Image 1 (cartoon, rainbow, N blue to C red):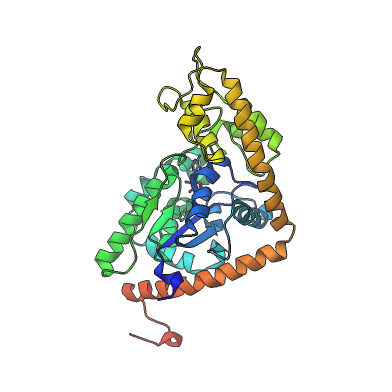
Image 2 (spheres, helix red, strand yellow):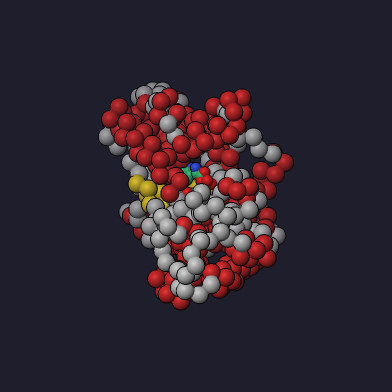
Length: 347
Ligand code: TYM
C-alpha cells in the first residue's frame, strides 16, 4: 500500500452560494480541513451541484465557484497535500447521488430540518425536488470516496446521520462493504458560530439579513463594524465568561477570539472580565481584521490568475475521479446494474 492510500480518507465541501465564505464556515469547517490535511488523505470540493437546488444566477455561479476554491487555498488548503476539485467536474457524484436517492425514504428526507426551513422559506412552488433530495446527493459525495471522516460544522450533523443510515442500508441490502459508513468530525469549540446581532441563531446569510455576519472577502472595515456592533448581554458587572445559556453574545465572541488567535477561552475571559465589553470587542475586531486582510490578499492572488486556479481544479478532478470511478463501479455491480461491454460486459 502506498503512503497515500494507507491513511484514512476524509472529505468535505462547501456551497458556492455567495461571493464570500463567512467566519462560521472558516471556524466551523475550513480551519479543520487545513489542520487535517497533514494526517489524512483529504478531498475538498466546491459543492456547485448543491448550490443549484435553490434558484441561482447562472451568470455568477462560475465566478463564485472559483472564488470559493480560492478561499480554500487562501485558508491553507494545499493542493500538494489535498485533492481540491469542483463537484460537477466529477460526474460520478450525480451518478452515485441517484442511487442514494433510490434508497432514501420519502419520510426520512422530509424530516431534514434544513429542508424544512428552506422549503418553508421558498414555498412549495419555489421548492425543487433537488432541494428535497439534496441530502442524498451529499451522502453520495461522501460514499463515492470511501471517506471515513467528514469535517463539518454542527448544522450538518443531521445530514451526516442520514448518510450513515443510507450507507448502512446499502450494506445490508447489497452486501457488506458496498460502501464505507462515515463518521462526522465536528469540533467542540466553534462548530456553531452565532450571528453577531442575534447570538441565538447560527451565523448565515439568512440570519438577521446578513448584518451579523463577518464575510471573509469583504472590506475588513465592515468586519470591524460588525464586531463592534455585536449584541452583548445585559450585565452591569461586564462579566466575561463562557456561558452559552446566560451569555450567548459574549460566549460567541470568546469562541471567535479563541479560534482566530489560538488563545485559550479562559485566558481571554480572564483578561476582559469586569472591564467594559467595548474593550473585548475592539481587540477582537482588530484580531479579525488582521486575519482577514492577508487572507484576502492570498485569495486575490489566486483569483488574479484564473488559468492557474483552473489548472489546480482540473488536476484535482482527475485525481478525484481515479478514486471515484472504481467505487462507483463497485456500487453499480452490487446494485446489479449491467456492466457496459466496454467494461468487461455482463457479469
Ligand atoms: P455549507 O456550504 O452550508 O457550509 C459549509 C461548512 O461550513 C459550516 N458552517 C458553519 N460552521 C460553524 N458555524 C456556522 N455558523 C456555520 N455555517 C456553516 C457547515 O457546517 C459546513 O461544514 N451540505 C453542505 C455542503 C456539502 C458537503 C458534502 C459537506 C455538500 N456535500 C459532503 C460535507 C460532505 C453545505 O451546504 O455546507
